[in-house]
Image 1 (tube, rainbow, N blue to C red):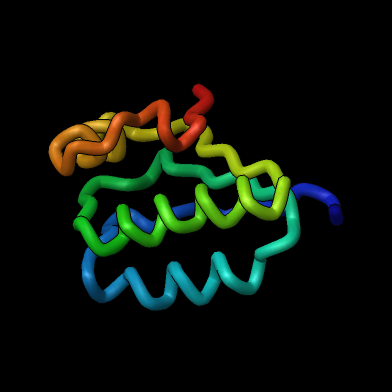
Image 2: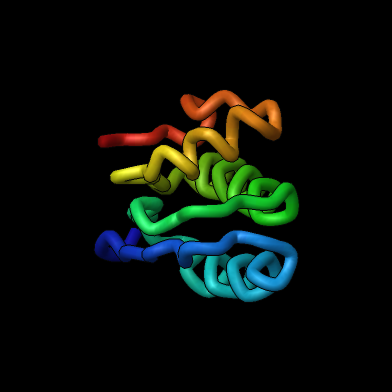
Length: 92
């Protein structure tokens, strides 16, 4: 694996953000990845699906993917959509 890469999520994770997020994550596949979720203020189901898919992909690839500094809105958005935040290996 290459060195750890970082990705900062945008404030709004909605339908418009889903495709660019998926493309960005795909381009980082194969690297250990640290995702900063501190700026997220709004989340939609499509981006949650993209993030859950990334978690599975990174696990299948035996790479490290961790979410750091999640905003209260990020955690709340996950819970609202029925996703246990521990599924994403969140670190404060």
